[in-house]
Length: 270
Image (tube, rainbow, N blue to C red; front, side, top):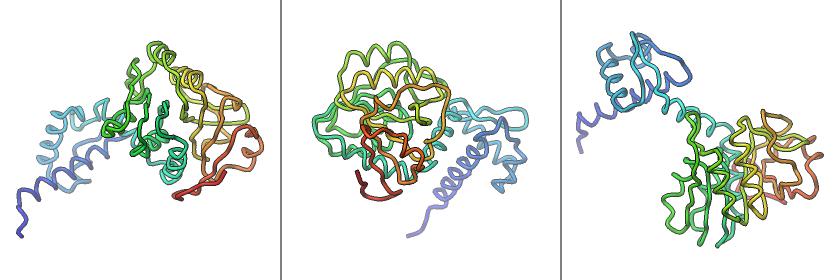
């Protein structure tokens, strides 16, 4: 079968435009000349690509170059966080999903590790899932065997999360069997996040669940962040990877049952 030359050109343009967006990620502005050198095409081709991407709302053209549009900046930042310690997050999520039984009401916190948990919930019948994460809600829409409740609230310009008094009030209306919580950091005093609004929502999630499970890869331990939102007495179970520092194993209380998984492994140990 012969390949349609038009389809080849179309695929080439798609790849090239993705490279343009990658070049813009994390930079204030990139010039046309740099994009020409990166993509090895003509100045005119790059300018056509920029016009098309601007029409799609993915970038803003500037004098002599372009910069990412705000929604694209957020998407790239979230995607980069997803890729950090991905093997560990996947193994942790697989183990955490085993704790979720048919018919449960489960709260899923925001974050890339809880997003991985959501991706492992297919096939668990009768679930009710509450979340403040637009990314998690999007991942679960394709599962007709669960009931999804997206908590209302204020949408941040910098992350795919809902926060605010509406989110917290809505959480108070529910009672969940399990809250699956992430964290930016953890030390002997408890769990931390870099955002005060997210900290308040996480506290409300913990307060309105019978049990709380922390899912966090080992790189988060022995660190702090801007706001402490929970102490270890509030965490019934921890699922992390076997890179957990020895010092952290000493200060995690015995009452917090700890499951360690190997990166990419199928199982864990209690």
